[in-house]
Length: 570
Image (tube, rainbow, N blue to C red):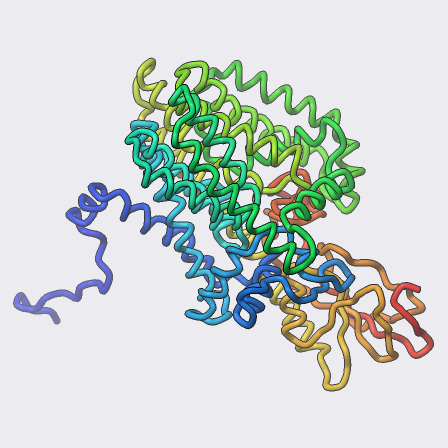
């Protein structure tokens, strides 16, 4: 029995004190750091996913041969080719991975921890830039954080978030350099432009973007224009270096790949534009949630009606394009119409800001958004969340500027409305990120099930497919099939569902021995042809994520029969 002199047990974990909360509000940068870690922390154990292996293999090469990042061969499309021919991105992120692996090792958690740094830098850079553009910089940074495309991209080990880190800080320093006539900041911005472009080629678009913005701002050429030679020289030097190493300028190689592949994989005609709008709206869903606070209901209704009508016209085209889709076409079209309407709203934010303000800052944001959209929808070899990602900071700032304008005309949005809208957007972003995490986890699990059930000493397991599946299959000793693979009786063949470069095996070649199955997210997909989701490439689905029935990850295992021989499929 407790006496009056005895104290009741205290909980081990206390809620943050009011003093701590007040301090965080006075130090918004630290609040943003904590929120980034809080949002991404649950996904630090995410298995290597999609194109992560390409960057990991190059990083492993760099640890052995720092001056030759792509000097090895890889099987990534059923044919062994030089890495420099397959890889379509420059190597800065691979060097970062090699450095991170030297500290944390080649494990998933350690490398994802290393990639928290560029994610934090993107959000802090958005906050810093927003301070020059709007009255609510903390709000703009929070919006950028809770966009689905940012959270999903920040859980990968690819080049996109690191590129955006260098991108946003080069814009910050360029804007501040022009405002303060600071040559140090302008030169630093130019250096970051070069690093960004050598992280992902798209960042080379910063050169014309910031040139035009500076010209609008200053009304004449000046010493500032000379600094833009730095990223140009950096790209030229990279092209010369790769020409000397591999006999091919890899910058030109990437351009040839994009133009040569787009016609084969893209949606035909008008469908490309609708898919691009749907990707923009879905990837920036939290922004779309706020649009009803900015636009008249009649305008929103007209836009939604137009996109729904367009989606219905394209219904048959879409279904024929995505031959593995097995859900409701009406449901897919409804989702496409919703997010395409949101994409129109996102672009309208940029256009309306120019009309209302007519200033250099408006032109910077508008050209940033519209240029990224045009590249993602009509230039790059496929539409993807990765190509939409660079517009995130600009769109977040445009939303904050739009709310500033609304406050002047109609007063503040009720706090309850702001909180509910932001919460709904954050919840959707986290659900999409979780779905991608579960997808990656299911792939790793189905590989482990394959190992447990079928791996035997002295027996070769061949496999089709790439992405994270290839990484983990090779980790258990399996071999990727190529065009010259010779099958031997008793060899096993693994054929995954929902993976590229797979083909059926003729019955006379192999008999089914069993299968491995692992469920991922059951009702929300980021990359599943049966569900119509293609976050990493619209060749897989016309939406960045899709609600509906999502089949589990499945691998069928066949055994080569004694009577077969020769290469696979012949």
